[in-house]
Length: 377
Image 1 (cartoon, helix red, strand yellow):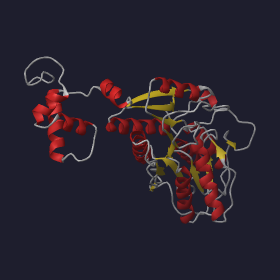
Image 2 (tube, one colour):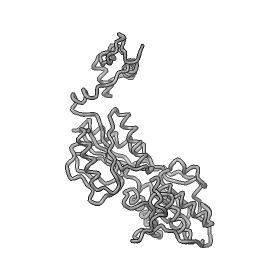
Image 3 (cartoon, one colour):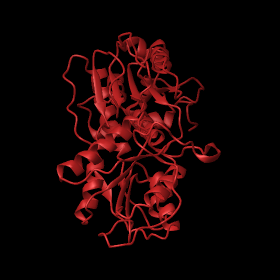
Image 4 (spheres, rainbow, N blue to C red):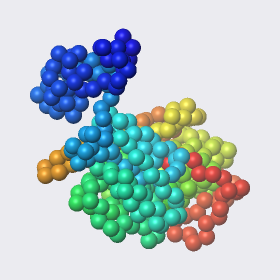
């Protein structure tokens, strides 16, 4: 049988009644299956889906939207970037939305545009989306959406920039993950832990710094001045040159893996062993982290879990507007221990040229050489 031709062999697009006839069920049952309603047996669901696949049947989204008052689409506002964290989270959202049967509409914002968020939200509302996901990891001066948004909103890993009847949050556990990374180094016997932070306009960088600082304070340990990078390996390298000069540095928690990799390179060039002299922990667990030398201990970000839980709660809110929101749960914390961390050993202070990374609070940032591009978050 030719796909899409129907049992009669004509070329008309198959309808739900054709699926019902082939599956041996009622048209109402077909509707229940495609609306993912309860009280449909596994056998009936399998027959309906099999018949739909054989016929090449596709639901008429326009008709369903007209009947239900919903477009069955979800809009996403996200920073237009190739950085590992935001890009991976967007991929997780895309996978989950596809599995729920909703269409996805994405609007990218541009770093440095304070009006970008409001324009992106307005664009999605004009398209009639049933809900909005905000994955905007940077605080822009003057940013905000003054108009009230009339659909449920899911905000990932940041404070909500919108006013809406229902605002859900997910992916806000970076401080707990930073605590876990810092505690791992303290448990190995390090007296304190230095921090290579991300740019402080990023909410994620602030959360990781806060978790690191809170952990040291809770253990009664000294809190060294953090050094700020820009998420790139180049900024990690510059920070490593600076930290290599301090003979008291035995452990560093870096806010992402790329900076950690640059840091390790600089420490090694300064004659320091990782982890023999300095232990290093990263954040994200990017694919290459397991294959650098030494393989990097890091905190794996649960992008898919965050997207799964967040979208489940958003879809529930869209489809059950009068029901209470589903409860949230903290994201899992997965510390991946490899060979870049070990108990401390005594070493003599290293000597070398000072790097160009700056301590937080230093008003004079030295720009990266040749305008080196940022890489993954």
